[in-house]
Length: 166
Image 1: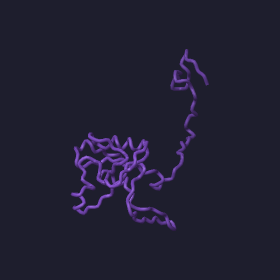
Image 2: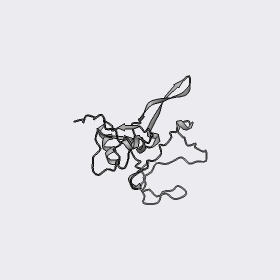
Image 3: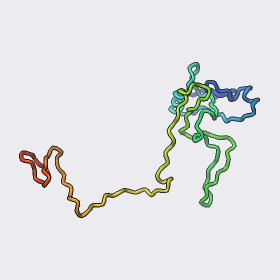
Image 4: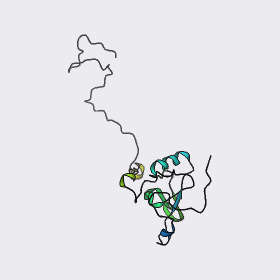
């Protein structure tokens, strides 16, 4: 059963955060607030990472931008026009699909978890993808398939008593 979102309460759910409260609004610092995901798996992941013991994160809650790494916040529309990348600022920032709240500045440091940086792919670094092949030298001996229990001397002779299946 999905909970209906309550309109009106848009303060941050994170412990120790004052975003959305009247005292923070007077400071004139605008921060974006994001709704909790509708997807059940992502909601459970968010619940694991938000360190709050008195309440459970539900679909009516909000979290502000202070609790997400910048790589998770999308502030621009990105388009390719005539081969050039064009960025247009969004009216309201949104989160990427893999965004998870991990920064909680007003809590003990062990409650904030650092995620590893996203690795760049080979193609984004300009490298050509392809299979590497081993070049066979003329001096190289052809490989023989043999049982791992087979004993062979250095000149290629079998040890007496060993069995061979070639």
